[in-house]
Length: 58
Image (cartoon, rainbow, N blue to C red):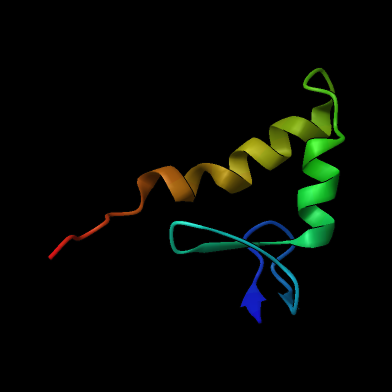
């Protein structure tokens, strides 16, 4: 289970990118949204925190 960074719901299925979780519904919508649509910009904004996370190695 994870907390989706796009819809902000707790979901059972999805993918992890670094330490972030994207539910299967949001993943599907993101993949099938044309880059010219306004909704695509919304997804890009919601995904920005993934790029800003600090990763630590041991």
